[in-house]
Image 1 (tube, rainbow, N blue to C red):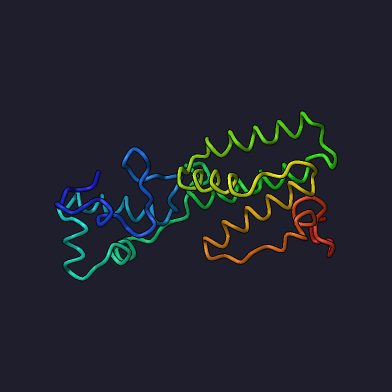
Image 2 (image 1 turned 30 degrees about the vertical axis):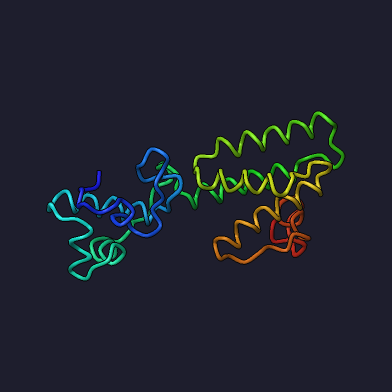
Amino acid sequence: MAVDTGESQPNQLPKGVVIGKDGKPCRSCTSKKDFASWAQMTKSSLKSGSSAATSAAAGVGAGALAASTFATPATPDDCPADVETLGRSTWTLLHSIAATYPKQPSVTQQSDLKTFMGIFSRLYPCWVCAEDFQNYMQKEQIQVGSRDDFGKWLCEAHNAVNVKLGKDKFDCSKWEERWRTGWKDGRCG
């Protein structure tokens, strides 16, 4: 719990910490590093009775406070997933589903995939990501007519997220090589 300094909550949080719908920092929507910064800041302010505002007044921003007080250790695999781990795992699952989706799916398989993607987008742990994906699906209707249709649609959805995160776009003409058959240079065995 953050110490009340009379400032609004967002000013008390390190950059990158996303507030959940319950008003608390969302572990699933925040990177481990940013979540750890928030936890350390909170711990420090509770211990000393100080706040982020006090640190800021002393010329130490939230990021500098976190960096100066501890180094973020590697989080063990048996800890809750952060937004980055969750995202990588999710894209791996979704692209793997695309790679094994039938070339010529039945009407039932097409319906099942649409249903799955709709439910998945509503249950996704990071609410910000979930709402963003739902909006994408409304704007760019999911393509389930074939493996190639779904694979390319999913690749474009992934690229839309990459652009928002400042990452490079993937060449969607190579989606099947990346997620199904393996690279032509043989490095995938």
